[in-house]
Length: 352
Image 1 (cartoon, helix red, strand yellow):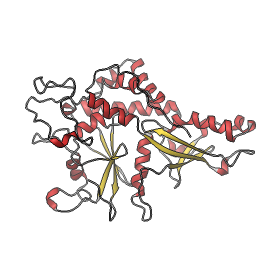
Image 2: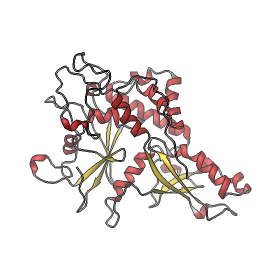
Image 3: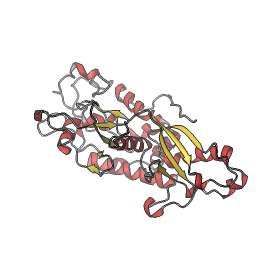
Image 4: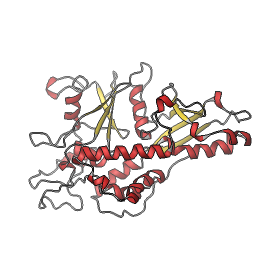
């Protein structure tokens, strides 16, 4: 079984301490995977008792980046020398245990969370954040008409960079921050993902990602409950001047919109413009966002009805009072997107 150890080298950029904390917690999140080679595709003379491989994969990583490690295991333990010469890595592709083709360009954490909410619709399956995601690895005959592109690391890099640019445009109304990066810096973002190096990634990502420093001098002090790890950290972060500084154009509350997508169980992906601040000047919260988009699942407070669903962000059941601006600055994926996975509540289940 493989695990990815977190790296704790000193940060090379200046960011509020609580923001860095949540970003690091998101970065160091992992999910359990069980990867089993399709037994019908195992080469002759393979050891059929060892075709499963277990690992804790980083949430921010991608399936194509796991292939070299899986290949090393199969060559060392499962395949013989003849099979090692025949097997072609470019023909490999993944399915879920249920037979669903996996989207190789999605972050692994999103694949896991999407699987979790899909289980919430199954009558006899209780969602669990501790169950390994069981994947089937196929060694031949990739369905090219469905994969669109070969699931290689290079194709994955291009998809990742495309997502970053789209998120950049949604935040700021242009892609100047992304296109203004030198090629070495853009490559450094992907290298940080490949090597699972928090500081290498954020050394560049901090130039395009908003901060959590407050923007308005009349911002009220945080309520007592804001010390919870589930809400926006208080403005006592290093670099905050307690409201004496002018507006910060890099603040999470100053972006045009927060890059957000909603994933429904076995359903469509919803994307809309999500301003960080509402028309009345209040911060846009997750509860307001979900009620506006999915009122049948998340009824308004004055309706007197309970929620019929719950929201998962980065593997965590998100509290309704979390601010969208803070989520965009601290809980977005490495590609810049806040992925909100909505699962259905069952009788006896209670979430915020």
